[in-house]
Amino acid sequence: MRSVFFLVTVAILHLGIAFADDPTLAEAKAAFSKADAELNRAYQEVKSLLPEWLFDELRAEQKEWLEYRDSAALGDAVFNGGRENEGRETEAPEYWQSMAWSTETRTRMILGWKTKGKDGAGEVPWSGLWTDGYGGWLLIEEILDPKRVRFRMHVVRGPTAHIGGISGIARRNGEAGFFSDEGDSDFHGEEDKRETWLFFEKESGAPRIEVRGIHTQPYHGARAYFDGTYTRLGEATDEDRERFEEP
Image (tube, rainbow, N blue to C red; front, side, top):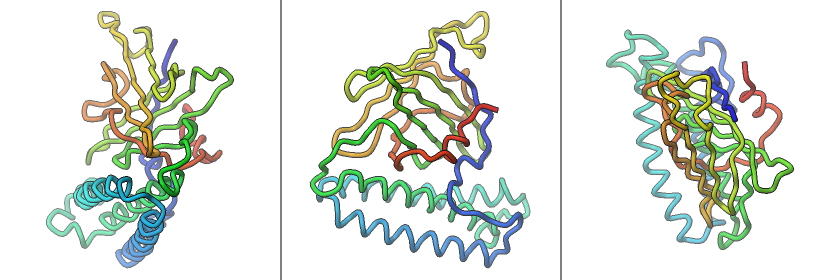
């Protein structure tokens, strides 16, 4: 069984907000203000739906994400806008673009918790679009075999945008899944036929799935990785699927 390496564009991260090629500082700030207001509305809506124990988990996750968002925006201001933005990052449109993009994605993640509803009831399906909010994206599709699912992953990690991608068929056993490329990927060297493994574990009581990998280096850049906790955004759209298509 072979997996496929994807060349990933940063566009996979930005699923909702559209900017002009060169937005002004005022336009970028306005886009962030709108995204931030939508995030706050979503957060309050989900707070009213979830039992306290589940919302406590979400609140802790939200705090970590806010620190990441602000730090990542500082890096994006320089990486995407140029060295001239060093020391004046918050005056750069690229800073506010990054803040808006991250916030819009986080809003979709928060709304994904609505799947659970009152008292955390309702089972979360495997199929759908998932993200860890830190540059990792996962598309899972059900197939005719109930013991298997098809998955595709894209990651863009860090301020220098190290990328990676992998796809295949994972075996299912209840809420757990396992994938192996059996060491025959085109991206393994002749002297290194170690298998790449991925483990998927769906969390009971929350729309999240934990991904862990072993020997995944052939499928991503030096600072990229697949591991993380991914939140289900909802059913994948045709547009979402197109973003995962092989080049």
